[in-house]
Each structure stands twice: as C-alpha cells, then as structure tokens.
Length: 156
Figure 1 (cartoon, rainbow, N blue to C red):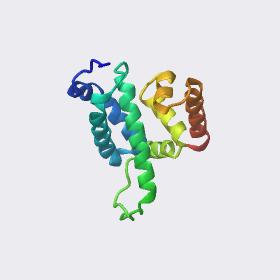
Figure 2: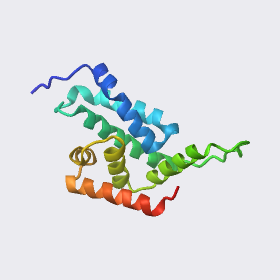
Figure 3: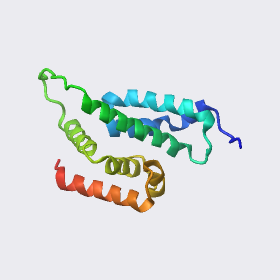
Figure 4: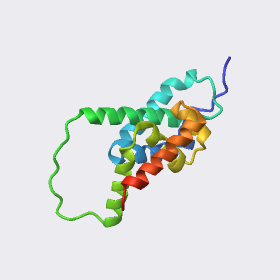
C-alpha cells in the first residue's frame, strides 16, 4: 500500500517553526539547532517508509521529542564547563524566562513532554498522547501534574 506523501521540502516549510519552537522550549537555545537538524535528518530517512500521512506535524514532533530526550541524556553524561563570570548582569526578564524554562527542563520526561506539547505547541491531548505513546488520559494527567509541580516549585 503506497501513501500519497507531499514533497519533503513542503513538510519542512510547513512545520519547521513549530518543531524549532518546541525544541527551544525543551532543550534550550544552545542545543535546539543540533536537535532540529537531527530531527529533520531522521525524518528524511524515515519519510519514504511512512505508512500514515494523516498527521505529519505530530509525527515530526514525536521525532523532535525523542531527539530532545537523547540530547538531555547526552548532556547528563558530559562534563560541565566552567564559564567566566560575566562583566554585566543579564536583563531581569530574560533571566526570569530562562529560570522558568530551566524549571520546565527539570520535569520528568512525560510531564515535560506533555507540558511543552500541550501548552507551547498547542496540541490537543489526543495528539500529545500519540506523540508520547500513552493514553489521552495519561497525557492529560502528565500535563496537569507538570503544571502543578511548576506552580509549587517555581517562583518568579
């Protein structure tokens, strides 16, 4: 059975912004470019064998989610570099935003994925469930628990 797939360039043009925003929110600006490239390379390799083209955005976000997890695991195995003390402090709003995203990155994988996919990428819980490979109720619960944990632990 063959599936009618749009050209890969069309897929890239249509969904690159969503995938990039998801990755920036998930792994941060420093690693987003690498994860973005790995996501689309993996998608390009798998694209000819894709059996269901009904929701290509979710398919790409699933790949991006897995690449973000790979990145986090890789980062945990690498030594941390010690940076020089900056001469000037960063603007307060940027610092608060970065602290919030750092707090999001500390959530467990399922909660982090559910929060980012539902609230940042604006996907329905059913789509989040497909990406995270769980039930819709589990996706809804993970998003709820993630937000609850952020509210308890993070203060601006």
